Image 1: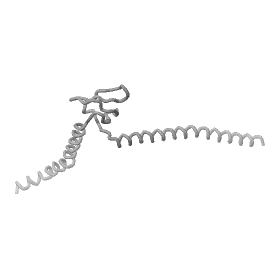
Image 2: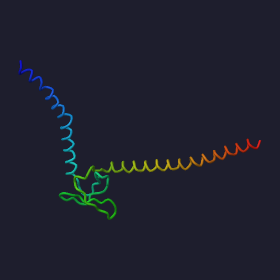
Image 3: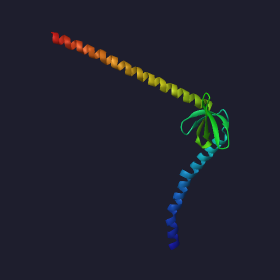
Image 4: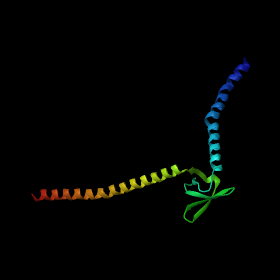
Length: 137
């Protein structure tokens, strides 16, 4: 019976190892494999985002680094590990639409702020005229 009690004491530890495997190690390996495939599939002309948030197009590939064009006549060298994401045509369009929507929202907010003080001034002028009219009576 002493051996059975010792085995029963190890069941929680064994169960924890199995849980860790399915919740942590296995998904992490899948992510690593997916990232490795993404890095291996890089080609010149692909649009990428670096871990620093810099967006650009791959000009050339080398063993340890990439040359990325971020603007006209502006090229930078980036390590392969610095590539966070490869943007497809659809993803690039989505990012552009998001930026456009954010810009429109900022413009509307600026217009609202500009209109609000003007309305407040006209209300204040109206209140002042009413107060003057009461004082005059």
